Amino acid sequence: MTTQVLILCTGNSARSQMAEGWLRALAGDNAAVRSAGTHPSTVNPLAIAAMAEVGIDISGHRSKSLNEFLNESFDYVITVCDQAAEACPVFPGPARRIHWSFPDPAAVQGDEATRMASFRAVRDAIGAQLRAWLAEDPL
Image (cartoon, rainbow, N blue to C red; front, side):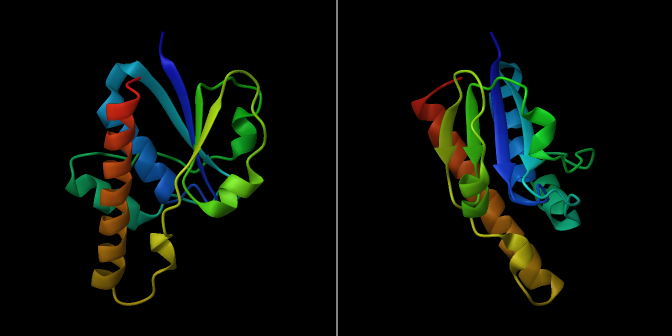
């Protein structure tokens, strides 16, 4: 049986999108992974670029509202920002809630190199966190 995972953030533009890409790549067919936001916007081009650097294509992703998933059952609901953790509704079914707080790379000011460095750092932190989680709790 495929493990159902929902990853939540505020805008569903960077952190949750990168986490979705990572988990799909790391878990393969063992997980059906979706991401959403409490206030969805658009997928950040720097998130797409950062993930492409590690061979993961999220260019086809779209920003989605968590309302799209309220009637679905999940095994895991993972929040990747504090605001989403506070706003996360209770999902029906066996969903285990996991919260990991990552800084918002889109909030970093500066030139493109500075901003891209923040996306790379968050990308790498999310990837490391997901690898550690899967090592402890294989799907």
